[in-house]
Length: 118
Image (cartoon, rainbow, N blue to C red; front, side, top):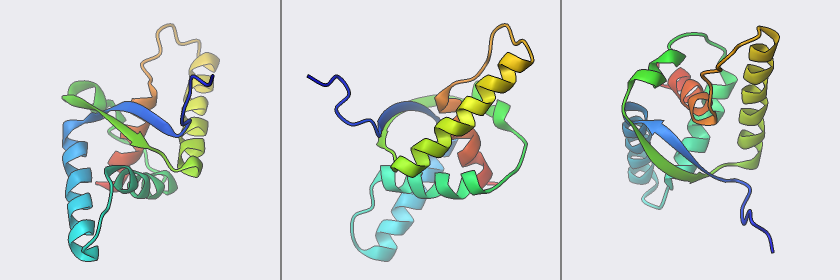
């Protein structure tokens, strides 16, 4: 019996301002295609754009905004890249002897999405 039915399905916290932008993007895609366009697909497309952009900035904003819980199906390649980026954050913290790391997978997703919406 497998406990993890789909390894690409994750639940995370999304800042409300980012959630609104994702839903606006999703709505625009639905109007343009006159078909279906899932929240997960919208999030994956936007994350692919965010991961390819290299910018530093307001990743700390995530700590101070309201959030909502969402469950999405990640594209396996996007999920792999996110895990690598998150792993690098953990390694950097360990190398700098962080006592209480302020990181989470949700925060990494937020950081990549904020790059897209600048």
